Length: 137
Ligand SMILES: Nc1ncnc2c1ncn2[C@@H]1O[C@H](COP(=O)(O)OP(=O)(O)OP(=O)(O)O)[C@@H](O)[C@H]1O
Ligand SMILES: [Mg+2]
Image (cartoon, rainbow, N blue to C red; front, side, top):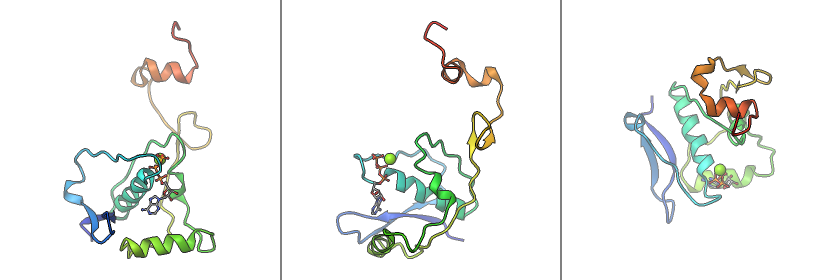
């Protein structure tokens, strides 16, 4: 079993592969970068890496950027060539299309696994937003 998660190729020439050591993966981390620099893809890669070594991952995915983890990519997709080229460039040897076991949780219990919680655990702010309450309410 691998002890490191492949994160990407280091700048400027992508020559050095960057890894996250699993033994340090319980520390807090921050993925930061300008718009469009690959923050979400980095999180996906980390989630897939954890799943591959049997570590369950809980992701709060407000915009739906990460839900694609549940489906394998398509070798007939127009981005297949750029993806494989990029994987080769950064030394991502394990590159393959794969669906990951994803359970969607749904606060409303309509389109996914219902989230069970008590009113007191939810807190006034979250509850207020769910019920669409005003500041005064
Ligand atoms: N390692 C990578 N190599 C090549 N392209 C990448 C890589 N990581 C991300 N991309 C591409 O760059 C674009 C932006 O990636 P991503 O959505 O992860 O960025 P982001 O930092 O989350 O962006 P935003 O700030 O807009 O939320 C996407 O088209 C993605 O496919
Ligand atoms: Mg993003």
